[in-house]
Amino acid sequence: MLVIGGGAAALAAAIDAAAAGASVRLLDAAPPALLGGNTRHSRNFRCSHDAPTPWTPDAYPPAQFRADVLRATGGGADPVLLEALVQQSRALPDWLLAQGVALQRPAQGPLPYSRRTAFFLGGGMAAVRALADRALALGVDMVPGCAAHALVLRGRRMTAVVTDQGSMSAGACVLACGGAHADPAWLARHWGAAARGFVNRGTPHVRGELLQWLLAQGAAAAGDPAGLYLVAVDARSPAHDGGIVTRIRGMPLGVVVDRQGRRRHDEGADTASTRYSRWGQRLAAYPEQTGWLVLDDPGLRAAPAALYPPLRAPDIASLAVLCGIDPAGLEATFTAYNAAVRAPAQSDAAAGWRTACLDPPKSAYARPILEPPFAAYPMRPGVTFAHHGIAVDACTRVRWTDGTVLENAFAAGMLMAANLIPQGYVSGLAVSISLVFGRIAGRAAVQAAGRPAAPLPEPDQGHFERAEPDPAGPVT
Ligand SMILES: Cc1cc2nc3c(=O)[nH]c(=O)nc-3n(C[C@H](O)[C@H](O)[C@H](O)COP(=O)(O)OP(=O)(O)OC[C@H]3O[C@@H](n4cnc5c(N)ncnc54)[C@H](O)[C@@H]3O)c2cc1C
Image 1 (cartoon, rainbow, N blue to C red):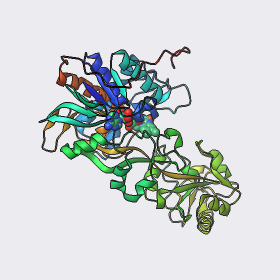
Image 2: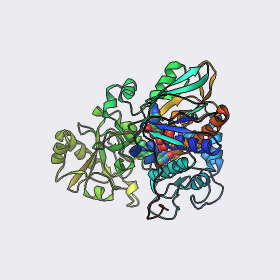
Image 3: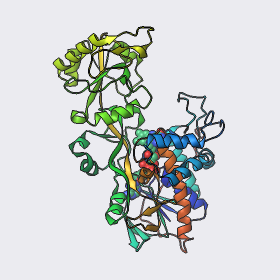
């Protein structure tokens, strides 16, 4: 059996297939140092539970999980796949622990309270390393730095996968190679020139080669090719793999302006923890996809920590010059904003401050922004994943536009996540989708393949090796 990919979905498929007795080879386009795709960057996953567990406080009943997903995705989730996700998410913590993945106890460490999600201890990187070790221990042949380019099809049956190392035959395959959002040409096709302003928060290796090949052959698509889950990140982030730490989150504490110094949205409207994702979508429509969060000294002190230090200046005009914002425009914005600020009538609570007769308004946290030095974070939209992929049936077989399916080729993880999240998002959903449908695909592929008569042929080079035990002990 061949598994294409190296993130949560691929590792889950490989582990369950190998545990069921299959001979499994896993191909990952990334070099060994980038093992784990975007799963490396993740920290939590969503799981239903009826009572407190050591990893998740209180309860998160299936009905709430279902309702949360339907609300966030505008009702677009495939109901059969959603039910499988909700029900099988219950088993994820125990399954992960059994594979050697460590989870964070909720009352410990700096992580936020969450009854809906469990957190990996040591983050996605530690989880991926543990899953890879488990796969190796089960005999999975892991081949890094080897990309798959196409399938060899005989009718609706896959007979081999065309790879960097030649054609590899197999009884079944699991495609867990993510979306196409790290491919600049694909982004430009759907976003035009704006795509040049986007930052990729994750691996550069999810370039959608197999996704685009499958669609060209007649596979059915799921979701929207222009749909991206964007968050506001520091514009100085690396082009790829900046991860979670590049987010900018202090918007309610200041004002957000474009290069002309103009405000375009109400910074007080979104105060939930999801605000950086709303701003990601907004920034995509800004000129050059760039905006600045401008704060005064008290605002900066109250703002969440950020990776890069802000640009700082003693007055608004100097800050504008430093940032490349039109100074007259920024000064005019601040004069109008400060003049429009109204203190709350009853209490001094920060949320009660708002502007009057200002367009756009600031409807909460509208404190005067007057105290130097002033600070600015340049921001761009950061791509997390695409709401687009391959349509699958209930056991994750790749669907074809003529209504048939590939009998022995299965899709898991972000390659098929648009069946469940064609738009919108709730925290921890992506990793749960990858793990649940990776496991489903792995087990279904074993059945579709049967036991291979002979072991898979040796590839030429580059196998992962099992990590030596850390003398300091596991990260638990
Ligand atoms: C910064 C960041 C933070 C995130 N945080 C969270 C979080 O906390 N919780 C959450 O639920 N989700 C989070 N996500 C989203 C989530 O991590 C991913 O969507 C999910 O882990 C994807 O898993 P996957 O296995 O489907 O794909 P990935 O983990 O992206 O793996 C895809 C793999 O396929 C390989 N590949 C691609 N093309 C080929 C090819 N042609 N041949 C061979 N191999 C190929 C890649 O090298 C990669 O290893 C985050 C994403 C980012 C970018």
